[in-house]
Length: 511
Figure 1 (cartoon, one colour):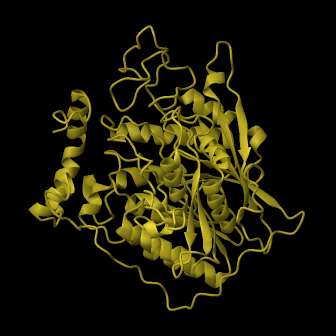
Figure 2: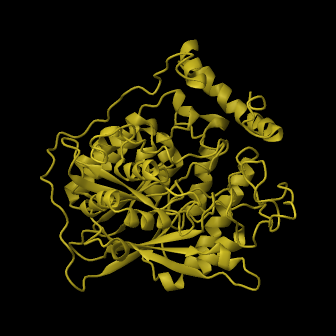
Figure 3: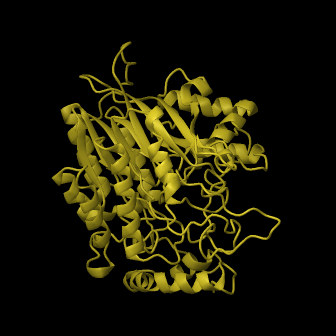
């Protein structure tokens, strides 16, 4: 079917089917899908109906929710922490300068991509605006050039370390990427504590993260054990314990702040293991509720980091997470995700009216160029380390490598400051209401949206313009921290049809 439908070149089809077959057969064997449901899943509603990802609910404690209390602005001169945010590094071990950036495979600019015709240039030395990932030298250049953006109090690193050659990866390849990049981060950040989260590309097959009840060779133990070993210098024993079980953990990076790293693969639409049972995989959300309640009881604040943003998750997982965020809005001071490779955010609202913004998840830009982007990273300014700190995001700034300039003959890479959020968008602060207001300002001010569109793509937007349907879909995505919830965008077009929140964002198959 892969070959017949021209989903990928024949050799990619062969390799992908061979790589995925054992796990897929095991999932089908254990799944409770009926034949008509399986047909509906594979071929759509014309073939059958399937509802395997049925509704479920986590339990919230009986403790009443405290009255909402927005954070007070920090006093003038209060300490401010700079937190480095790295995500989606996607190191390609086989990147090769001069190769074809526009090959037939899902990933190009590498050994095996062939050479471009003489009418087109080949892959650049530092990276390429195409469906290509990064050579190690570019990632090393990024880490080496962090100085002007620092100093940093800590680092949030939200996964996706290997490249997008997902049809031909072995466990050995994935572990090489994990250890190589961990060593590189440690080399250039030295004593600064780094807190990683698991991405969807760390496993092979890609997106394949069995819940902890899957034991033996098909479990994720090979990956979690390697992560625990690689990250042991950064994480305490109790965090390493839950990391080994389910790829998530919690720790206290400084007094009054609890950091929770979630394994967002347990909410992923692409994680085929969830066809067996998608109800709170690994008990992770129930564990999160316990962590947040304990933090509320102590009077601590919480940051959550993860890879896949909540609005991109399976519906029941996403709606449960949304409910948890609303319940613990006074405790939750920040949310930080990656995965989409672009620079955006997702706003959370109160569940009763869906009109009061109460939290925002920041989606940081990727290090990789995949697809047609400049490499980049983010720095958050956060209310600092002092008694009574709110630990909320006060502002953020983004740095990029302009590949056109970097790849010019005789040039050296220069990582430059792209923009600062509050200054660029005219925000009074970086609290949820300000981001909510920004979305509606961009609805009415096309020029302001064009600025956002340019920065959304890290300074390298597509050549085709983003017209009204594209603009509304993009703005809708910023309002959609809950999956399959079109009413969140109801005010964008009061008299028209609702845009598709994530319709403008899609991955090539296999990636």
